[in-house]
Length: 255
Image (tube, rainbow, N blue to C red; front, side):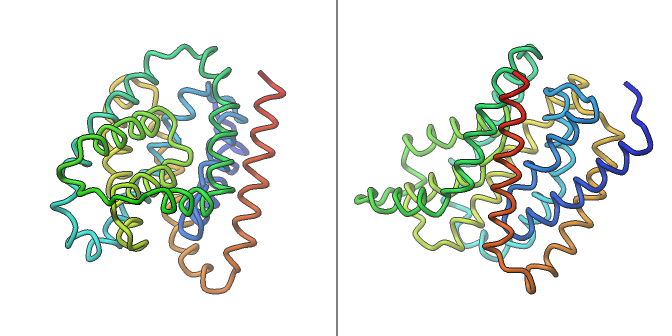
């Protein structure tokens, strides 16, 4: 598949926007993933390439939260193990999924991710309201299994992964939002990073496109961190929801 000069511009611009959105409110994949599909990359390869392109930004966010992660890192050992196992399973599952099957599943995954993003505050609030008995992470096999299942989803697709992890960590008893977000970033980096190994080895990732988009995402993340001081987060969230809904409708119409 040959990529035209105009396609290169679209891909770089989408990654720039994705990096900025992830720095401000999340949901960057709603922009970068469909653009890869629109320029002609098969959906499975587009999904894998998008994960590789945005991974440096995920990794960078972990370093930004390192001071918050450090005090709770012992409690996260079990969850990291679950995340690694689930991430590998998710990546392998994607590799062994047929292109036609994935194209049929994508609209539903996009719808799920968009709804999660749109109602993430409500989801977190509901989870906190139903959690009466706080659980110690290190000794809760149930929470580790739940994180593993979330990690399988993250390794397979990943849209809305951060929200699912935040809800799971809330169930696990991490009540402080900053701690939960920091822990979620660490687990997300583990899931994305480990799932990329089988995806890279399988050849699904387009290295040149991933590198191009990674540069755009890094720049976007830098400028997004600046823009967040001036742009209302609520407006940006509404924009992301609109984009997610539009892309979801597109994929449903092209089943």
